[in-house]
Image (cartoon, rainbow, N blue to C red):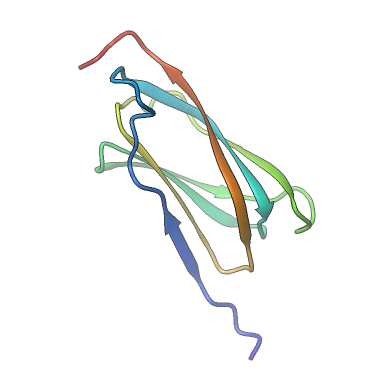
Length: 103
């Protein structure tokens, strides 16, 4: 009927196969993503970093980058994407920096 259907996806938590604490610097999405979607970075299950993602271009298949504040450190991270526009997600690639700290 033309009414947008909201969506929400969340990845499982991962430590990227490294026990050290990490910071997620940015995420790259590839696919068709509408504008004004919400990207959520989850750390340690209780901490979230929410940012509104605005696609700077049209909704043709392409890569999009979202940066995050560097203060969020954890061993485990998960990523969420939500909105109400049509989207097709091909890949998610996180840019992760590691620290020397394990605990």
